[in-house]
Length: 68
Image (cartoon, rainbow, N blue to C red; front, side, top):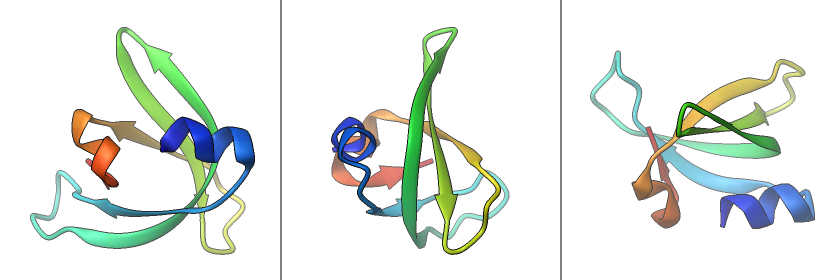
């Protein structure tokens, strides 16, 4: 799902669980790239109309649309 969104340049709906907050939040992400560093995958994406690119750790739960 994530890699397809990067290749097809389409937005994805995700649920993100921050380390600071225990409540999941819904976001629409605009994927830019996937980066792998030391066997950890990160999705580089923009949110809403912001130009800043966020690095979001992708976990195994990401296949179901959950990031955290």
